Image (cartoon, rainbow, N blue to C red):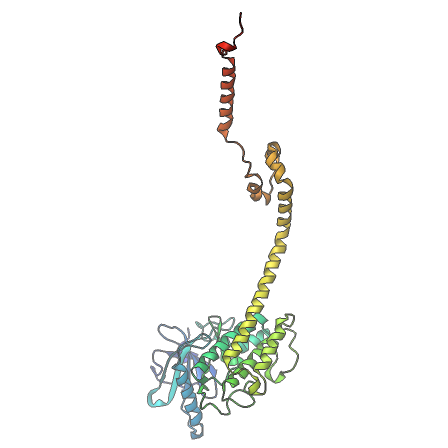
Length: 377
């Protein structure tokens, strides 16, 4: 593993040891408008993602820095939930020159590893969509349901994320989670011009319907292969358009991304319920297809077996010689008990007993008869 000095870019901020509690930054892996994200190591959790936001020198940007800090503070105080990145620790550096957040590390992109800081790149939904263009419908529904459940958890605590997009969805142990909580805000004071063009609602963020719109655009991107500005275009060739449920999926996204907030889902919970219902329907159809394929594959065995059973069972039960001479090839050998079990062969000792009984009958028949049965001389 590279040392801290070797792994850190020349333009990354330098902090004294111990500035981030037990975690030690190794290499910058991301940079945003208000801070940088480092690959870091430490005890217990091993590698983590460490976001560091330095206090700006420009007084005009202090409000943005304070907003970022408040967003992460609100988010870190939430109970953990599936679909949300887990925060491991927060704090401030000496002199409050920066605040930091340690969170669980995303999976590496193919070919990378957290054990090699030089090769590590976080796996995001944006990178997956760029590589695959459009994801299969079943995977889109599973991702959508999980992310809608995460937003439902935020909304249950009266919080809005306000920046849902493919680049802010990470994969941790193979599961998608929403990250980057810098714009999280209380729903009573959330109205502001924030978000990412293409994913922010027309009326700007400030209500739960805004996050629903952003998630709908995110699912549109991964399901159709089209960028947000291409909304209304036909899906790409890689999209799962051959599945009838795909058009039901687009109808759900159409409601989620309606320009009018009043026509959208009122909450992430309502959005999740429709996605979950379609996912169950889609999974059931796939299971029915699998059962049909298994039945078709079994027909070459089942049809001859049933015919054999119906035609020869009576003959085999009545004709012992034929039953003994018949050959049972695989797979009918395993069905043999069904054909002959009701007329089993006699046990080996039965013939000896029968012979003994026959000898006794012959012996008794040779004995003299009763006196009144004898003929007179």
